[in-house]
Length: 362
Image 1: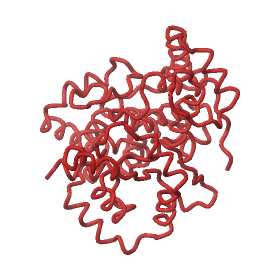
Image 2: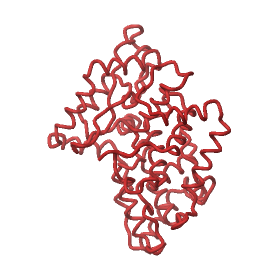
Image 3: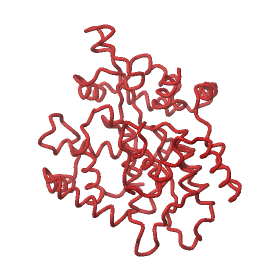
Image 4: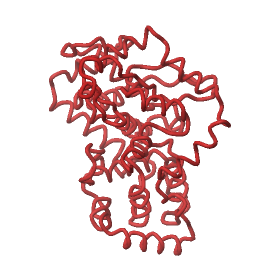
């Protein structure tokens, strides 16, 4: 299925992200692209595509940032030149006009993300919904708060089961996967432990009050969750177990059963010498730190460690023959040989963010 062209509003929001970050900085990880992906989906400009995994996904966001890099006269690299006339028009419209861009972004969010809509209201989140979402937030790593995580998908279903609003007043995307992921990101904006800003789309609403009330009171939060489960006959306990190293070790035992086709496709993207060289050139001269274990090989091997970093493709491929298999520079992370070997050995079972979590827990 061919995806629709980017609209002026989508490009404006993505340009705002582009101008806020410097490509390649470690604090702006792949999860940042996922957050923007969920935000664009929540606009509901193309409601029939909101749950399509390829629609405005993180890879698409990364490619669009690359398009803006190619247009940007202040960008020293090459960027991605397959940009449209509308890309150029939007970029030049707001180039060095931060006040106008901020106003445009505010207008777009007001139009699409406010609670009042012409047809149906975007019903505000109630306390019970926020408590359940916060409980899930507490057990996820920042890199797991995306719309393809099975736990996020399952919570969306649970929230739809709660009889807090009559079904006849609910919008089509009521408590959708994208909206749950976006709400998790709102909690990130309140969390002092989070080293990125999260998304502040709802300002200082009830979600902030709930976070402050329960964030440091695990027993009180667990009690509140239990009361909600009992009152509405729902259960989220199976979603609240953390992915400990032991759990991941159990998943590794199923490695022999996984389909080898996706792994072969993954490796083909890492042995494409022409494109791999571009990835290497992009990272050359930047931080020589492994994005997983944080080791800096230069500090250990001196000059001998300058050229032994490797690059792991983190794009998730699909068995769907019609799905895109194109990659861009933003689909690769810099890793040391040891971490790369582990990620490849357990491909499909362990994501790079999960491997980070394993290392942290040692």
